[in-house]
Image (cartoon, rainbow, N blue to C red):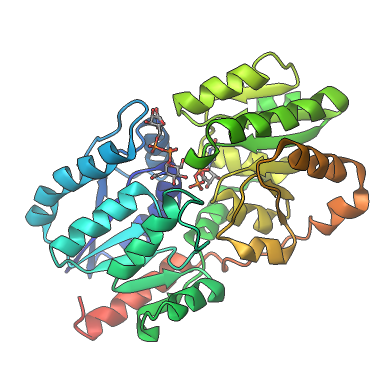
Length: 371
Ligand code: UD1
Ligand code: UDP
């Protein structure tokens, strides 16, 4: 029996790792999945664990209000050592680019435990954007023995960096595995009822590098649109970060056609996405989900590590300048031609069988006595 430890700590990692945990559980003749959550997020993580019905074996519970990168990284490094010593996993699987991912991979490196990196090879090659995620994923890329790359583009990034080709596997993204289980034809919600005769915009914004001036610019641009267009309503399921909440309250708090609501459970959120007119976001994961749903996205960031959605035509990178966001938003409200160009559903991230592919790669590595 091989001990596969999956370590994650934030909402997006959980959404993309829980399907893998549940798939591994189906193969309990040879795999023992062991879940360790860092609790980098608390409430937002726990909601995902509930949805996927997963009870972690270990919980580092490190979250603090307005935590710094130092606290998160050091907290995980200090607490995970004993667990890794106790469990001695055959392999540790981490996901993406968070501080949880980086600190866990570093701990495994110190203890010579092999690491499998799910969602490997995404790059902007600008360590300041997204910050600190670009550094995190490049660093994990140095440590990982197996790179589960979602697309050929991410595989090529890894090859260009000199990673050995036989350590890189194009698997698609587990985001699509998750999405396949959440969308429902008969879904409804009071917030959707509120917005039903309007163009519904879904807004999310949370990135560290956006906080401060950039985030205020984003919100001001949206505010201008709302003031100009009576037929637009915005739903903003807001991140729990108090810094983000304060900025949103200051800029958008008094606007009746913007509903700032608590974070939605993933089933609700995916169904909101599938029913909206368009999306404004600085999120990473939403850039993977929206192309599959054919929903236009204005990506309010200076860079993206997800060029697949830009190529598919669903994403437009608009930066964080107020005027540019405003003009692009306005264009998609006024020009049917521009809007239609961005609504072709396409799915660059696989067919929802990424978890199965990762498991057969693990099977092969057992056969080759690598783990
Ligand atoms: C983290 C990740 C980012 C990812 C994002 C997903 C890093 C460096 N950043 O950023 O890559 O896009 O998660 O959302 O790993 N909070 C709560 N409850 C929660 C979650 C957060 O109260 O359930 C508050 C806390 O005050 C916390 C703050 O949000 O201190 C920030 O959380 P943190 O994980 O440090 O940063 P994120 O911006 O969420
Ligand atoms: N999401 C969610 N509820 C919400 C907002 C987002 O379940 O209220 C999901 C979304 O579908 C995606 C993930 O959370 O799968 C994205 O998380 P986030 O934007 O926090 O992080 P990022 O992807 O930028 O790292």
